[in-house]
Image (cartoon, rainbow, N blue to C red):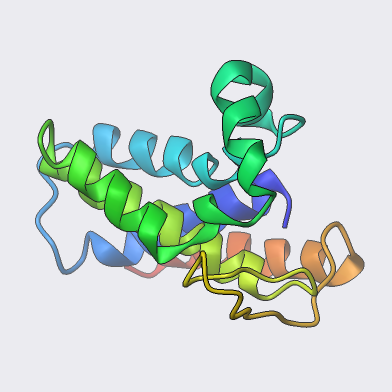
Length: 150
């Protein structure tokens, strides 16, 4: 999926999560969601985040796109690191990365959630297809509806 679909989906999930979990700093929470939903694609040197963090992106590309950074192991590692600094950011990062994994699991390339095991989850929706654009529009409509009918 494209970056804007990932961002929209993370925001949508965040809007529903804040109804159930007290978030102390909404701005920090949603900023973290937006940034961390892009983080799994750091394993691709031509991605938005990969271009900005080339040395790290180059190293992580060794694992292949949608390998380590698209796994539960990566989610746990990010949480363990960030929880030492901020539980709010750690929670937002986990939610954002999981939202990214969910969307990428819906594509034919899929993800390997149990990396390094070769087990794969994949779906029918091609990246940058008319279906993805429709999914993006539906997600945006759901965001608007959430604001309109809290």
